[in-house]
Length: 260
Image (cartoon, rainbow, N blue to C red; front, side, top):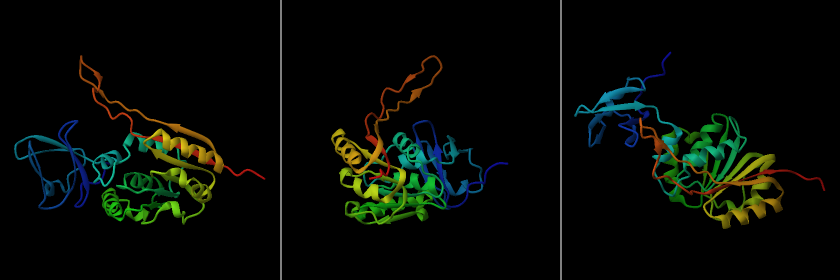
């Protein structure tokens, strides 16, 4: 059985080639304009995902369902986003899933927020702290585009002042001074659960790790992910010349409770 056809209001990814792609919402009367011609978005309603359509110049475009990575890369940006290569690694090291409750700070553009929400929905919830109200407005729009806004509670609050939630399944930090939050994260977490911190500099990591070890986290580990695409062409396959190098360090630790 094939999947449901494209419906009014759906987000689709329109692909010309491996480099030129557009994430758009399907609406009557809307048109995507490109250097290879225009595509009537209303005409996509009722067509199956994976179909091929032609622009008014006769150029072929492929219509596919967007992935989380597509939403992340194409998100409206209030701040620098966490890249898909890091998002996936963070997610796989949290021990969360459907029904989990996750605390996150800061929200920024909401990309990590949306990925977390997609993983814990529909029973779970993400509580996302952000001190900049203008960032929350951008994040809300991105979460709506991703279809996960109802599973997120956005909080205009400095998490350094404390975490309102308790017995949560994970705490994920993308803030400038994560070491100031470690104690709050430890108290908010269930025993055995994971705190994660994303930081661009090693000095931030060093201070955070020291605080985590003092607070009672164990199995504290820090990673950096480097990802390079391979260009596959017959007779001339090679690694991509340019790549996104260092983006940040990811630190993880598990909460334990030692008997006194």
